[in-house]
Image (cartoon, rainbow, N blue to C red; front, side, top):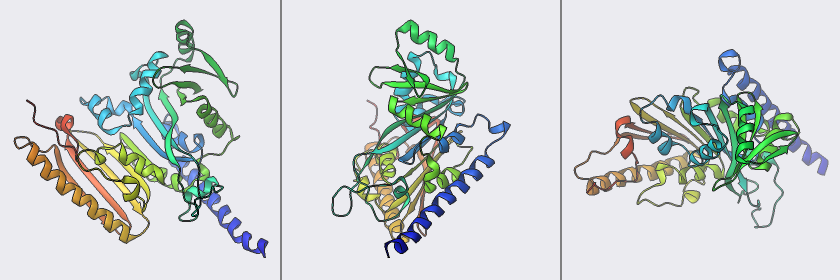
Length: 359
């Protein structure tokens, strides 16, 4: 009887892996070839483990074309980017050397069952609704960067500064200390990975086949397929990674303090993108477990929008709201939030965080 019970379960798992593999083949086929040879997003599927719950891709070369480059980075990218670039500068890698970067977050802590007892968790459990409850919370894992890197010059610079080198899976890596310690290893002439020593080993193992990668996470692979490739910034998240992104975004700032873990519990996946130009468009898509949950969450966001507008007028009577438009729509189980602001007003942009009048 036990064998008969397990067989369909094992079969369904096999179908998940087969489905993920199909997604990966389609993903790489669509974005491979000479024109996409340096597309860093292509590397994510084979470089990060299934424990990944959040990814953020930043096309720095696109952002540098805009006069508001510094403001765009500050408003729309993780705080990790600034600390990372400080560490890279110690190795002689300047901001202009990096064209694209991808940051990854993974879960930490223990997973527990409904009874609160520790529960074994397979990477595939991250892609199931119900079952094991994930009490783990994301932490920054590391990432990869693509650009123009002279690894011989980096090694020479490290030696001159007394920056130690270590060997990770037979590859030489350089580790920078300070407030945000990081190690860097070469993957290819134009590609490098960064993170802790353990993170680098996990990335190298995933790429070599010694460890698992995102092919075992069909939901993330599907989200990767759907991201807008022309966006300057995009990100995806599942599980606890959704609330983690919201807590660090403009949507959570200001006088409106919400328990995002609780509010976003019905959300299965997050996808966001930022298109830059004379107008900046932030588009956030949330897939909920049910249409009822989507409608409830939509009303929550609309309430926040009304409150923000009232607070802005009260505290800034002589200044126009930098948010030119904010649309919140839901269709069945999906919510789409679109925020538009003029680039010249970017320094004031924060949809739920009104700025006081300058004195």
